Image: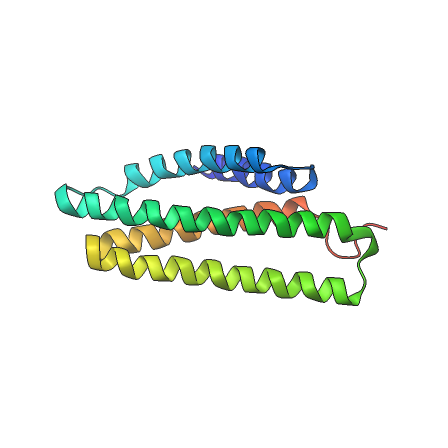
Length: 154
């Protein structure tokens, strides 16, 4: 699973430096989403109504997560295209947008954890929270390992 996450994270971060388009991003997200869902299904074992409720809410979450993922890719593209000429205002704007996006992502996970807890039980919700946090952390690390720090390249 760790290998899959690193590969996906690198693909996402590298795609930000290419001239990506909507179809490429949608394709990468669909592959990532399918692989991720298979891992969730293997880890979270539910039956009947709880299973149905979990997957309905999970799919709703994934739709919203993908939108935030597109914003993350756009932010990385902005960082890459402005890297060599970033002034204080651009640097500050990118940092603020990155922080806001992180907060939106964390809030989304917390919101859906609560929805899942009500619909599918505390254990399944906690498993969702744990796995989703792991995936997000792995992607964040892969991105940071793939991009230069501000001022690193001259």
